[in-house]
Image (cartoon, rainbow, N blue to C red):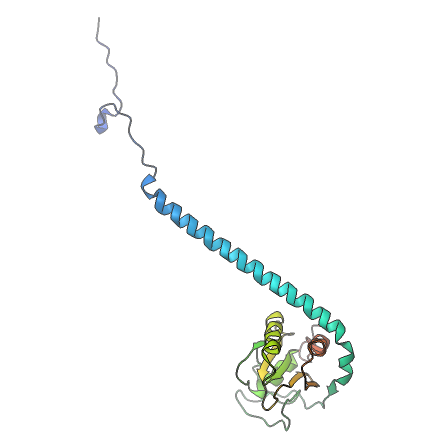
Length: 212
């Protein structure tokens, strides 16, 4: 009887019939696992931070709306200012407005962006910001709670045509001055409701591109 010739698997690669081991990358399992855990942790932190930011923004907006409703009577104290034009100056050129907190007139081609500033901003750029529809709020030493609220508003309203600019103003002490295009409201004792009503009434209504 002829001897059967049975093929031995793996003979060609020197395994002598033993089942060949497949490397699935198991050596990197621990390292990959650690990396995945780090990525998951970072994603969780990002989601939590985003949720916190959303809550704070929503809470700030809701609180602002409540203040607006309460502050409507204060709008009777808003002062209308003369129209001093909308001429553009050469970039960086100075201009004398004759008042501490101008609300119209010749201005720099570049407006001040919305935000909270710790140093005084050029008046010529602030006036252009008013023309854009931003509210410019001047402060000096109004107290930490007031500064915190103004910072929150500057963060809440950052649109290109309807933002809030908060900048230092000279010799105000505890007073705060709010300005819009040709409008002024001075608060010798800061009233959040009155300030919110002013911001809501005039934000986004500048002559260059009104959006509200």
